Length: 240
Image (cartoon, rainbow, N blue to C red; front, side):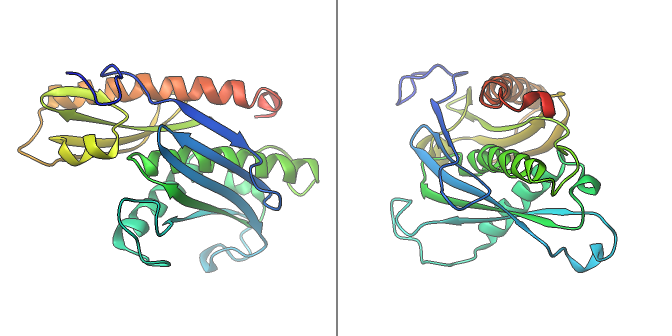
Protein backbone atom coordinates (compact mmCIF):
# COMPACT_ATOMS: atom_id res chain seq x y z
CA UNK A 1 0.00 0.00 0.00
CA UNK A 2 1.27 3.45 -0.92
CA UNK A 3 0.96 5.96 1.92
CA UNK A 4 0.09 9.57 1.14
CA UNK A 5 3.40 10.87 2.54
CA UNK A 6 5.48 8.22 0.75
CA UNK A 7 6.50 6.32 3.90
CA UNK A 8 6.87 2.56 4.12
CA UNK A 9 4.31 0.74 6.22
CA UNK A 10 6.81 0.32 9.09
CA UNK A 11 8.36 3.79 8.87
CA UNK A 12 8.09 6.54 11.49
CA UNK A 13 7.44 10.11 10.53
CA UNK A 14 10.38 12.46 10.98
CA UNK A 15 10.76 13.41 14.65
CA UNK A 16 12.15 16.79 15.67
CA UNK A 17 12.72 17.73 19.30
CA UNK A 18 13.82 21.08 20.70
CA UNK A 19 14.69 20.81 24.39
CA UNK A 20 14.34 23.83 26.70
CA UNK A 21 11.94 25.36 24.19
CA UNK A 22 10.46 27.81 26.71
CA UNK A 23 12.42 30.22 28.89
CA UNK A 24 10.64 29.91 32.22
CA UNK A 25 9.66 26.25 32.51
CA UNK A 26 11.93 23.96 34.52
CA UNK A 27 11.63 21.45 31.69
CA UNK A 28 10.18 21.98 28.23
CA UNK A 29 10.33 20.83 24.64
CA UNK A 30 8.70 21.25 21.27
CA UNK A 31 8.15 17.87 19.69
CA UNK A 32 7.27 17.50 16.03
CA UNK A 33 6.02 14.14 14.82
CA UNK A 34 5.56 14.79 11.13
CA UNK A 35 3.04 17.63 10.98
CA UNK A 36 1.92 17.10 14.57
CA UNK A 37 3.47 19.66 16.93
CA UNK A 38 3.14 19.66 20.71
CA UNK A 39 4.68 21.96 23.33
CA UNK A 40 5.34 20.09 26.58
CA UNK A 41 6.40 21.65 29.88
CA UNK A 42 7.21 20.28 33.33
CA UNK A 43 6.66 22.37 36.46
CA UNK A 44 7.38 21.35 40.07
CA UNK A 45 4.82 22.23 42.72
CA UNK A 46 5.13 21.85 46.49
CA UNK A 47 1.64 20.43 46.85
CA UNK A 48 0.57 16.80 46.40
CA UNK A 49 -2.86 15.14 46.16
CA UNK A 50 -4.65 14.71 49.48
CA UNK A 51 -4.02 10.96 49.53
CA UNK A 52 -0.25 11.61 49.55
CA UNK A 53 -0.16 14.29 52.27
CA UNK A 54 2.57 13.59 54.84
CA UNK A 55 3.65 10.45 52.98
CA UNK A 56 6.96 11.81 51.71
CA UNK A 57 5.99 10.56 48.26
CA UNK A 58 5.62 12.72 45.15
CA UNK A 59 3.27 12.66 42.18
CA UNK A 60 3.29 13.24 38.42
CA UNK A 61 0.18 14.54 36.71
CA UNK A 62 -0.58 15.84 33.23
CA UNK A 63 -2.91 18.21 31.42
CA UNK A 64 -3.61 18.03 27.69
CA UNK A 65 -5.23 20.63 25.45
CA UNK A 66 -5.51 21.38 21.76
CA UNK A 67 -5.21 25.02 20.74
CA UNK A 68 -8.26 26.44 18.93
CA UNK A 69 -6.79 26.21 15.41
CA UNK A 70 -4.50 23.24 15.94
CA UNK A 71 -6.98 21.17 13.92
CA UNK A 72 -8.86 21.62 10.67
CA UNK A 73 -11.79 23.23 12.48
CA UNK A 74 -11.67 25.57 15.48
CA UNK A 75 -11.75 23.91 18.90
CA UNK A 76 -13.40 26.00 21.65
CA UNK A 77 -10.76 27.36 24.01
CA UNK A 78 -10.48 25.69 27.43
CA UNK A 79 -12.93 22.97 26.46
CA UNK A 80 -12.22 19.95 28.68
CA UNK A 81 -13.64 17.05 26.70
CA UNK A 82 -13.79 13.40 27.63
CA UNK A 83 -11.04 12.84 25.06
CA UNK A 84 -8.80 15.42 26.77
CA UNK A 85 -9.35 13.76 30.13
CA UNK A 86 -8.58 10.31 28.74
CA UNK A 87 -5.36 11.50 27.08
CA UNK A 88 -4.03 13.44 30.06
CA UNK A 89 -4.65 10.44 32.31
CA UNK A 90 -2.78 8.27 29.83
CA UNK A 91 0.17 10.69 29.81
CA UNK A 92 0.22 10.85 33.62
CA UNK A 93 0.14 7.04 33.98
CA UNK A 94 2.90 6.60 31.44
CA UNK A 95 5.21 9.11 33.11
CA UNK A 96 4.58 7.82 36.63
CA UNK A 97 5.62 4.34 35.47
CA UNK A 98 9.21 5.50 34.89
CA UNK A 99 9.69 7.61 38.02
CA UNK A 100 10.55 6.54 41.57
CA UNK A 101 7.95 8.77 43.22
CA UNK A 102 9.41 8.26 46.70
CA UNK A 103 12.66 9.89 45.56
CA UNK A 104 10.93 13.04 44.33
CA UNK A 105 9.93 13.95 47.85
CA UNK A 106 6.55 15.41 48.67
CA UNK A 107 6.02 17.45 45.53
CA UNK A 108 4.07 17.22 42.29
CA UNK A 109 5.51 17.68 38.83
CA UNK A 110 2.87 19.07 36.49
CA UNK A 111 3.17 18.16 32.82
CA UNK A 112 1.37 20.43 30.36
CA UNK A 113 0.90 19.20 26.79
CA UNK A 114 -0.41 21.83 24.39
CA UNK A 115 -1.08 20.71 20.84
CA UNK A 116 -0.36 23.58 18.45
CA UNK A 117 -0.86 21.51 15.30
CA UNK A 118 -2.57 18.13 15.02
CA UNK A 119 -2.09 15.52 12.31
CA UNK A 120 -2.53 12.28 14.24
CA UNK A 121 -0.46 10.88 17.09
CA UNK A 122 -0.99 13.78 19.50
CA UNK A 123 -1.24 11.47 22.53
CA UNK A 124 1.92 9.54 21.68
CA UNK A 125 3.78 12.78 20.91
CA UNK A 126 2.57 14.12 24.28
CA UNK A 127 3.97 11.09 26.09
CA UNK A 128 7.36 11.42 24.39
CA UNK A 129 7.52 15.20 24.77
CA UNK A 130 6.20 15.06 28.33
CA UNK A 131 8.89 12.54 29.24
CA UNK A 132 11.65 14.71 27.77
CA UNK A 133 10.37 17.77 29.64
CA UNK A 134 10.12 15.69 32.84
CA UNK A 135 13.70 14.42 32.60
CA UNK A 136 15.05 17.95 32.13
CA UNK A 137 12.92 19.20 35.03
CA UNK A 138 14.15 16.45 37.36
CA UNK A 139 17.73 17.10 36.25
CA UNK A 140 17.35 20.77 37.14
CA UNK A 141 15.92 19.84 40.55
CA UNK A 142 18.86 17.46 41.04
CA UNK A 143 21.40 20.17 40.22
CA UNK A 144 19.63 22.51 42.64
CA UNK A 145 19.74 19.74 45.28
CA UNK A 146 15.94 19.73 45.54
CA UNK A 147 15.98 15.98 44.86
CA UNK A 148 18.75 13.76 46.20
CA UNK A 149 19.22 11.82 42.97
CA UNK A 150 17.79 11.39 39.49
CA UNK A 151 14.62 9.41 40.03
CA UNK A 152 13.96 8.40 36.40
CA UNK A 153 13.97 4.61 36.33
CA UNK A 154 13.81 3.97 32.57
CA UNK A 155 13.40 5.60 29.18
CA UNK A 156 9.91 5.78 27.73
CA UNK A 157 8.38 5.75 24.26
CA UNK A 158 4.96 5.58 22.62
CA UNK A 159 3.61 5.23 19.09
CA UNK A 160 0.45 4.43 17.17
CA UNK A 161 -0.09 1.44 14.91
CA UNK A 162 -3.08 0.39 12.85
CA UNK A 163 -4.56 -1.43 9.93
CA UNK A 164 -5.48 0.49 6.80
CA UNK A 165 -6.82 -1.30 3.73
CA UNK A 166 -5.66 -4.57 5.35
CA UNK A 167 -2.08 -3.30 5.68
CA UNK A 168 -0.44 -2.97 9.11
CA UNK A 169 1.09 0.52 9.42
CA UNK A 170 3.17 2.43 11.96
CA UNK A 171 2.64 6.00 13.20
CA UNK A 172 -0.69 6.99 11.69
CA UNK A 173 -1.47 10.46 10.36
CA UNK A 174 -4.92 11.96 10.98
CA UNK A 175 -6.18 10.88 7.57
CA UNK A 176 -4.88 7.34 8.07
CA UNK A 177 -6.38 7.16 11.55
CA UNK A 178 -9.78 8.37 10.32
CA UNK A 179 -9.89 5.62 7.68
CA UNK A 180 -8.22 2.79 9.64
CA UNK A 181 -9.98 -0.49 10.33
CA UNK A 182 -7.98 -0.78 13.57
CA UNK A 183 -6.03 1.84 15.49
CA UNK A 184 -3.87 1.24 18.52
CA UNK A 185 -1.62 3.27 20.81
CA UNK A 186 1.24 1.57 22.63
CA UNK A 187 3.47 2.93 25.39
CA UNK A 188 6.44 0.99 26.71
CA UNK A 189 9.73 1.28 28.57
CA UNK A 190 13.21 0.77 27.15
CA UNK A 191 13.26 -2.47 29.16
CA UNK A 192 10.57 -3.79 26.83
CA UNK A 193 7.80 -3.76 29.44
CA UNK A 194 4.45 -2.35 28.34
CA UNK A 195 2.68 0.50 30.09
CA UNK A 196 -0.37 0.86 27.92
CA UNK A 197 -1.90 -0.91 24.94
CA UNK A 198 -5.04 0.85 23.67
CA UNK A 199 -6.54 -0.91 20.67
CA UNK A 200 -9.88 -0.46 18.93
CA UNK A 201 -11.42 -2.09 15.90
CA UNK A 202 -13.28 0.69 14.13
CA UNK A 203 -14.72 -1.73 11.56
CA UNK A 204 -15.23 -5.39 12.39
CA UNK A 205 -12.62 -6.95 14.67
CA UNK A 206 -9.00 -8.14 14.80
CA UNK A 207 -7.45 -11.48 15.66
CA UNK A 208 -4.86 -12.51 18.23
CA UNK A 209 -2.42 -12.89 15.34
CA UNK A 210 -3.18 -9.32 14.26
CA UNK A 211 -2.59 -8.12 17.82
CA UNK A 212 0.80 -9.81 17.86
CA UNK A 213 1.75 -8.08 14.60
CA UNK A 214 0.59 -4.70 15.91
CA UNK A 215 2.62 -5.11 19.09
CA UNK A 216 5.74 -6.19 17.20
CA UNK A 217 5.40 -3.21 14.85
CA UNK A 218 4.93 -0.83 17.78
CA UNK A 219 7.95 -2.25 19.63
CA UNK A 220 10.15 -1.66 16.59
CA UNK A 221 8.97 1.94 16.30
CA UNK A 222 9.36 2.63 20.01
CA UNK A 223 12.86 1.15 19.84
CA UNK A 224 13.78 3.88 17.38
CA UNK A 225 12.29 6.51 19.69
CA UNK A 226 14.26 5.15 22.65
CA UNK A 227 17.45 5.29 20.56
CA UNK A 228 16.68 8.94 19.79
CA UNK A 229 16.20 9.66 23.51
CA UNK A 230 19.53 8.02 24.32
CA UNK A 231 21.25 10.40 21.90
CA UNK A 232 19.23 13.34 23.18
CA UNK A 233 20.08 12.65 26.83
CA UNK A 234 23.73 11.90 26.18
CA UNK A 235 24.72 14.68 28.57
CA UNK A 236 22.79 13.26 31.53
CA UNK A 237 22.23 9.60 30.60
CA UNK A 238 24.84 8.39 33.10
CA UNK A 239 22.73 9.89 35.90
CA UNK A 240 19.59 7.96 34.98
